[in-house]
Amino acid sequence: MRIAIIGTGYVGLVAGTCFADSGNDVTCVDIDERKIRMLQAGEVPIYEPGLEELIKKNVREKRLFFTRDLADAVAPAQVVFIAVGTPEGESGDADLQYVLAAAEQIGKAMKQYTVVVDKSTVPVGTADKVREAIRKVTSIEFDVVSNPEFLKEGAALDDFLKPDRVVIGVDSERARKVMGELYAPFVRTENPVLFMDTRSAELTKYAANAMLATRISFMNDISALCEKVGADVDFVRKGLGSDKRIGYPFLFPGVGYGGSCFPKDVKALVATARDYGLELDLLRAVERTNERQKKLLVNKAVKHYGTLEGKKFGVWGLAFKPKTDDMREAPSIEVIEGLIGKGAQVIAHDPVSAHTAKRVFGDRIRYATVPYEALEGVDGLFVVTEWNEFRHPDFERMKGLMKSPVVFDGRNVYDPTRMRELGFTYYGIGRR
Ligand code: UDX
Image 1 (cartoon, rainbow, N blue to C red):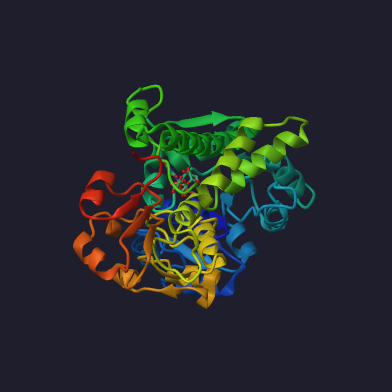
Image 2 (cartoon, rainbow, N blue to C red; image 1 turned 90 degrees about the vertical axis):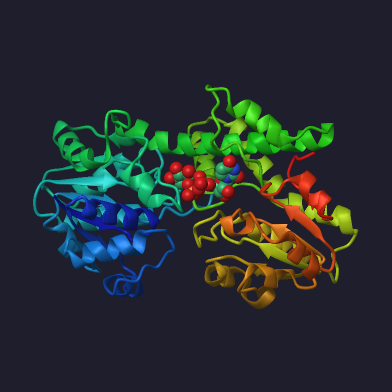
């Protein structure tokens, strides 16, 4: 099939590359000239394991192309994906200006029956707005489909190529057939394509992210209670997860959820409900718990040291989660701003995110090129992202480098008993 993808962010780039790899002819479009030039030269603007190799392979085999010219890409395409950004609007809702601008341009450029697919995470009712925007500018036949993306950063290719399920909101048999064919290589009976109406598909995406965020905030609340009553959240987590109705994933307490999806999507869902006169109290509490959780490590530090003025701290992990260089809504921002706001100095290490973190912190903190460099002469270490590199460090070496061996473990990476035996003062999240 001939496919055009509008927007080369995380979702657009991964989807485009995976569709090309399954034999389609894919052109990715972006207005950012620098990005397009980079991609044409085989350079990838984001860090995502395996993506660069797969892009290079498909560019070399002439199935994957990059251009700034939307009309050129759309005219011959049978399927056009809209994968542009939906930033947070003024009242917490998703701002649709880029989606609707893309829809209008697609409408003007298409030359034959086209399936236009909303891939961006968009509020309920957006497919109807996209349809209207296109209908205004063309008399050619088309269908609008809602096909939300569930991939996780750091595991994006695997998630896309082997999805748990593909959700497709569609109102016409013709478009349904096209979408079914397109996704056939990625699904088997146990991971089905679920066809539904566009509004249900749009809501499914928000509901999924809100449910996962709720699980995390729930566990963060339980971890706070564990600290009060002297229980260990890691036992509680296992005890819960082993119940098949609950399951293990997304039950890890920590420094709060971040990233480009959960915070924004929970807010947007609350805003959508409010538009319809409904208050989603549960999700507002989920947000409140997350805000509290992002402040937790700094509060623990203040309790420990009395004052942070003049102290120096190491931070391990900057990205909002491992295997990405994405700093969007990263809990490390709240932690580091908290520390420097209270007069402390920070030296941080992240395996791949120094360049994106510099855009956030500039030269207000120092950046260590290796983990141990972030420990030299520090009063304590904050572990904020659970990169594998931090899981089995040389603890004796750590102790030797630190001025005082205090560890604030925001991801429960280490065993509290072992840490104490090794001579560390250890603070975890909800641990005994
Ligand atoms: C998420 C959804 O998982 C994905 O389906 C959707 O398409 C986009 O949003 P992503 O933002 O890439 O994906 O990251 P995810 O792995 O879900 O983690 C989100 C945040 O939750 C991270 O900050 C992570 O550290 C945190 N988290 C996750 C926890 O604090 N505890 C957990 O148990 C799991």
